[in-house]
Length: 233
Image 1: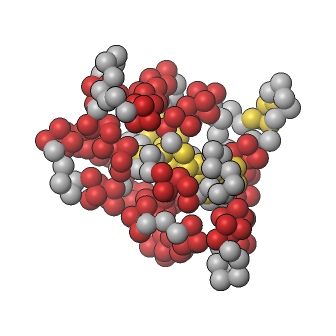
Image 2: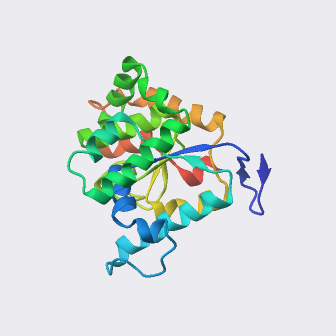
């Protein structure tokens, strides 16, 4: 542990490969805008400001990965089934590389997680009222021990944050749910939660996730998620 100028405790992870789970929409961005994100192109591929901001963030994440010890991007069976539903020729190439990299990292065995554990995690996420496929992706990120779950799905983002604090990066059972542009400052500084903080988050979830019939959804979300600013203090 170290402390910055404001007195906040910061856990610096060094020489540890982290897991960053990319939601399906971001995996599609990586395929559709491959030259911009991975090829070093300076020509903006889109005009829409919000989308361009996330593409630029993915480009920065790739550059940071090259500078540091790197991280793994899971290519789970569930994610691959969704991506390979109706892919374009270029998407097939990028998805295949993603899958190959995951297999070469020796992480594919993690896909065979205990179904009972998967079911328990998935059921615990029901209070957030996510779409089925989104809940499954987040479940897999939690089961794999990912640090970040990155998405550009506005609804998913909103449903994992207290309505009164829509801009906070929040922790769901040990996984930070955020847009790529939101995680850049934290990844570049090496700010990640430590084991004690992860256990604390899971404990909070276990204590309140069953009370969906007694608590209003707004209050339940606030109990089930922890803001990033609180976790690093």
